[in-house]
Image (cartoon, rainbow, N blue to C red; front, top):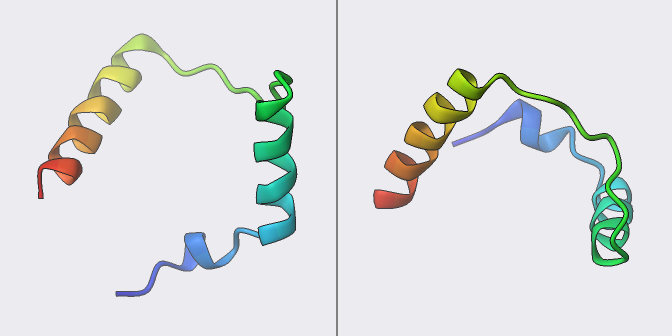
Length: 50
């Protein structure tokens, strides 16, 4: 299985984001409508059940 979007994630950028989160600084925060959050949670829960 190949995911083009995942391949585009730069390891250095991911490291920076994680380090910022550990330091208590949120970067690149987005807002998502509540109904979208609910649907996304359902999808994630289904994936984790597998």
